[in-house]
Image (cartoon, rainbow, N blue to C red; front, side, top):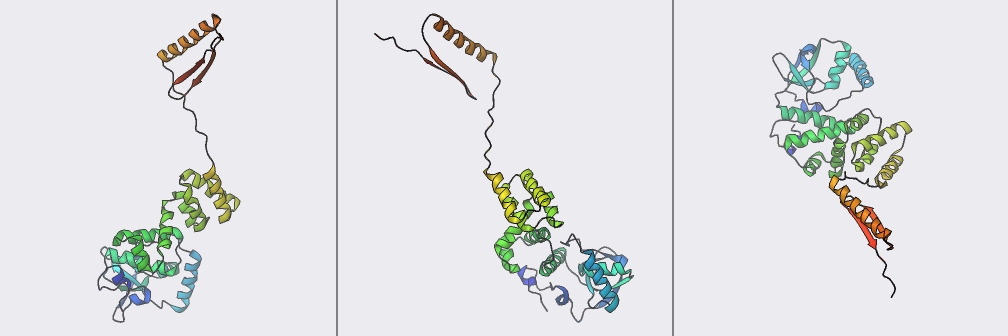
Length: 283
């Protein structure tokens, strides 16, 4: 059975099945030593729920493995997981020496695509892991966001919103991974642009337990604060000081002669300005 993603991602007629569709009745199931198996280097999932792995291990202990894992030959006498890493981790937990597996001959691109799509279909990835998976698929298959969205059956805005999360500071991405803040909280921080302000509001969200609306209000406050521009006073050169003092002395001499002066002195960033008013005598 050909998986639809084999054509969607331009991978020819080779199978790109996910889970059951990956296994053909003609495939030979072999017992492979657990010590000879390595994780999928393209695995998008960075956090595995240990509780669920333990539950799966108990199920496997009671009922055995209903479906073998799928691997490909890596280095000599080593096999890289293509699909079934949760089952593999459960088997490790049980302390089994061997695991039933089917060996497939797939390229890096095919292996990576399967790992990414398999996890995307499960809908168990964190928003950051999902965003990273989208980014890798875009890069591997040289697609636009619109094309990727169409091939995954998702809206373009969904893909775009996920990818925007990758522009946030690492501290915020890690907070999403650890589920300290939600995706909607993180998206509320994007308009701030300034990483320091984004982290500042994120910390406030965590400390105060702010909901999304309250987080958005904090962002609006920061965006509407208008900072007064600080005047930059330039150092006055020796010649400038002499010129300014000469004008002041001249004005003082005129005043001492009995002529009424109305003068105003202003300092600007680029220059000094003297405004002098000499009233006319009435005839």
